[in-house]
Amino acid sequence: MSASTSTTTSLKGGEWLIKESNAFESYTPEDFNEEQLMVKEMCLQFLQTEVLPVADRIDKLEPGLMPSLMVKAGQQGLLGASIPEEYGGLGKDFVTSTLVNEGLGGGYSFSVAIAAHTGIGTLPILYFGTDEQKQKYIPKLADGEWKGAYGLTEPNSGSDALSAKTAALLSADGKNYILNGQKCWITNGGFADVYTVFAKIDGDKFSAFIVERGFEGFTQGPEEHKMGIKGSSTVQLYFQDCKVPIENLLGEVGKGHIIAFNILNIGRLKLCAAALGASKMALNMTIDYAKTREQFKTAIANFGAIKYKLAEAAIRIFASESALYRTSKWIDDKEIEQANASKPFNEALLGAAEEFAVECAILKVHGSEVLDYVVDEGVQVFGGNGFSDEYVISRAYRDSRINRIYEGTNEINRLLTIDMILKRTMKGKLDLMGPAMAVSKELMSIPEFGNEDETPFAAEKKSILNMKKSILMVAGAAVQKLMMKISDEQEILMNIADMAIETFVAESTLLRIIKMADKQAEASVSVQIDMMRCYLNDAVDRVNKAGKEAINGFADGDEQRMMLLGLKRFTKAAPFNSKDARRRIADTLIAANKYAW
Image (cartoon, rainbow, N blue to C red; front, top):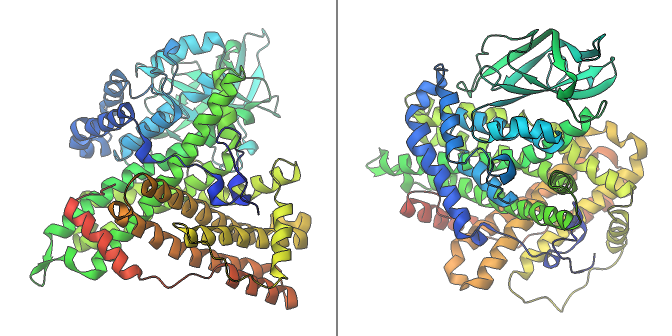
């Protein structure tokens, strides 16, 4: 693996896996400009003034409340951040639109409604609609006059979306498509005005349609009662000889999968952003409670066991945030690159998101699981009170759980992460086998000693490089051993995915710290360095565990022994006092009374 240089715009998805950390210049939250920070603050203020005071009423599905809040958000431009100005939006860059998702992420059910509207409710028409369709629908979706929803899932087709049964036939007069079937778990379904609905024309051509509320033959079921996100409208949709004008076909006949899967790439990254915002809000309320709750004549925030929980939540948030905005800027830059190559705006962004589909899947998994950790430990800090509906942390806990299911389950996203990397390798888009063979050769050689790199964070960079070598060793051997059968070995693929997720997030965190330390005195970012080292220290162990499980799942004999020795060699970590580091992190959180970075 060479330390080759890489410019941001020429970067390819998955390329971080075969390059050393110093090949990348990272973009971090410390790079946000004044306008971006103002946009994020506006989102947080909207939650504080308009949404959180009525959260209980939202959870009771008070008629008209959620739609009215969405109209208010639209009036402030929060629904159209990424929509071009010609269609009534603000035309902001991808990083800024991601910041909007983070800023609104702590609004519980409201956040779900907003994310569904601005994402899957609007983007299919914006990116795949005709000029006439965009002129008709997008301005009204941008200002909140109309609300959007998305109908893909069916009772018997979830992750396997292409097995959908909803059918579409062209009417005898050729003026309408006649839809028959049903959709379930439709977010915003109870009040939306415009739906992107997927159906198979003539039984086999998977296609998308724009369906308006009020179309003949289109009805909805009652509101579902859910474990969490209770204030999010969720209904079934029914189509009984529903007439959809032929001009409402979205995209091309038989190309609905292109719409469905491309929109998901963006949705996965934006879900990570929303989960990040929710994580910060949950941690803030947990810190505040830990400072005010007293036991044994002192605040529980003074106990080491509680400090560990607060610090670990902050560490994971910081790491997830680092990976999120690193990827967001990659997509932003790739979009600009494609626009400069005369690609239309929709093709530019979709192409950019597709290029980094691997990273979007990683972010979806990591962000949702960070949020689950934060709210779970939040309930634990609150103790018995955390189990009571009187304390908001219980709502945060219930609402978090859905994030590991929608936008593709975390299991599906783990499998996709490795599947996409392997497919890109097979197509020659990513040179994985060359570096993998180099790692195999290295395992047979005697380790080199001396001439140690003494530049700042050299040890951490070496750890990241060795984590990448671990992935290449395990993945390369698994592919060589299992060949075409590897797709049936889902446990092994998920082990390798976990190794990739930990490595990408750890590297993103390290690059953020290197950039911060380069711009400031190292002492001024000492707590952030503690967070990076805590995360990296644990990530190395997690890579080791996942690697061992994968190796033991497909190798035996001498091959197994050699690979386990190689894994041990690649996942060595210097002794690190993470206890004291976490205490320093927790003390900073407690002094600030919030997530402080």
